[in-house]
Structures are given as structure tokens and as C-alpha cells.
Amino acid sequence: MQELIRQAMEARKMAYAPYSGFFVGAALECKDGTVYTGCNIENASFSPTNCAERTAFFKAVSEGQREFRRIAIVGGKEGEMVAPSPCGVCLQVMAEFCEAAQFEIIMARSEDDYTVRKLAELLPNSFSL
Ligand code: THU
Image 1 (tube, rainbow, N blue to C red):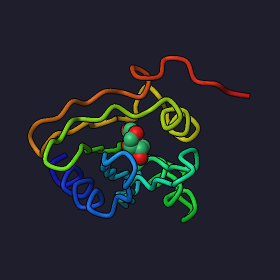
Image 2 (image 1 turned 90 degrees about the vertical axis):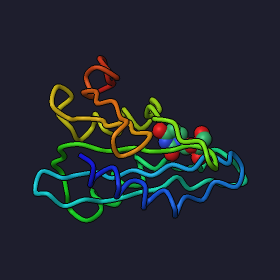
Image 3 (image 1 turned 30 degrees about the vertical axis):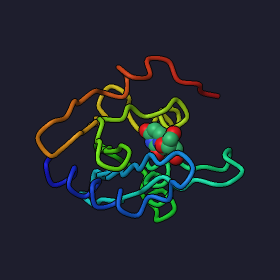
Image 4 (image 1 turned 30 degrees about the horizontal axis):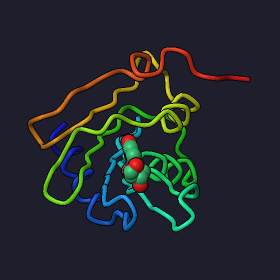
């Protein structure tokens, strides 16, 4: 748990967030143990902004991964960390690839201050075709 949070903290250093000043890092653990990290990437046009969680998922899926165990998320403005809850769009992306009753979302302020929730708790009903 602590190592995954540490990796999310490291990824947060790459965040590109000149508009919100809110820097986010994520570390996604696959079932085979591989970890993919991501950061938020903002844009002057705002809507193309990508959250840290989706960056991590899209990196992983584009490398052939399809099975995921858990994700750690850290974030906050300069000097004030919070434990960010994933946005609805990111939860929907998670629902595409993860078993909602099993997949764990770790929202962390630090390596030993975090909350763990199952995807099913944060998104009880996802859209599906
Ligand atoms: N953001 C994330 O990267 N993940 C979250 O869980 C919540 C929000 C980003 C998007 C935007 O760059 C900034 O945080 C403020 O909304």
C-alpha cells in the first residue's frame, strides 16, 4: 500500500496543472503486479484536460494490460495535500476494465493517511452497452 502511494506521489511531480494549480498523481497496479503511473495534464482549452487516473489507465491499456487490482491517488495544491476522490468520468473508465466489487481505490494524503473504497462503493451504477 505504502509503496503504491509513494509511486503516486512521484508521478504527481510530473503533473501539468498551470490552470487549476491542483496537482494529481496516480499509481495503477495490474493483476500481474506491473504498476503504471499517471498525472493530470491540463489544457488552455480546459475540456481536453486528462485526469491522473485516466492517464494511468490509458498508458496501461495501450501497453496491453486489461486486468487491474487497485489504484492509489494523491493530490492537492502546492503545500496542501488532500485525498482526492476520482471524478465521475474516471470512475466510468475504471468500470470499463475492473470488477467493481473487487477493484480498490486508495485515496491518500500521505503514505500512512489514506482511505480505501471499492469501485462499487463510489460508482454503484455504471453505464454499459
Ligand atoms: N483531477 C485529477 O487528475 N484527478 C481527480 O481525481 C480529480 C481531478 C485533476 C483535473 C484537473 O487537472 C485538476 O485535477 C482540477 O480539477
